[in-house]
Image (cartoon, rainbow, N blue to C red; front, side):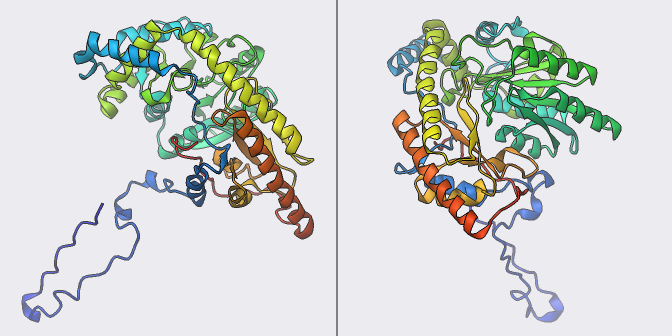
Length: 454
């Protein structure tokens, strides 16, 4: 967009117009609108890491960075037939404005989907959103004022951290162990806030195959976390995009199934169908649902009606449960390739999680290595990952990285781990020679790839 032209200076009648042109100042800033932006936008900036991801999207680079679902197993002919039937049946309605809460039939089907995780819900309490990312945005909008505290896992989903930052919330990270969010750490975080006369607006958690760590909370752990939340009257936002992708068996009971008034549940069809439809939802208590619908209408008028009818038709005409099983088989092969490649190619001192589902492995580097500092050298070696600092609001995570196994083929994943192992080996040699980065350090948050980058 071109910069608006500045008005010509108006000459003072007494100076003969001599300063008419010379009085103008040349604005040399790259962004001449900077003084007009709201304060909440000051943290919205692209980093050098984001530019590297553009390079990493080239075909010769094995990208273990992105989180794009792999829809190769989705039968596009079946989807195409369903869309054709939908247009013939309800085309004019699908291309009109709709309800700010979402189409009734889809909300009923969403309740059926959630029943697989033990949730008994009524369609009146479901609000359809533009993906679960918008659901998170709407919830932060209605609950958080600038400076309010939000509790989130350490590490946490980068999209959530960006949303909390956009609304100027203060993120307090809560530690995890091998079984996900630690109830003792949550109790201490709540008690610490209480001692300082503060309280968190809500806890944000991904209980199933957490992004980025890949960890899952056992059923008893979920109950313990809910007990802590009751103790401190804490609201829980349960974000569950990966729950149906349990590679070890049936889905675990959702936290929402254990406490309907304290837990607000976020769901999405991006991982179990296709992300291009941008269809997600919120299941919330009735009073919260009313606020969500008003916020939705202010933001978008209504979620995309065409997408809602398309998803609804898919659910009613296709074996979507069988399709999820097909996705699980595909992701299991990729997960196994990732774990095998890491076991073969990582140097001593490297550790990683072993997820039972979802998309991600969380890797911890040997002491002295810095994932953000070495990313340019990794991309030069034709492999990419996301530095751990992207998943902390406080700049920690320099010894960590997120590796994604959802998109590349198993063969490419193994090749990617081989290339990554080569980079780590060279970094360790440099560290032994020069003693670089002896202590973990807090740095400015790095960024993750764009949604459309693999």
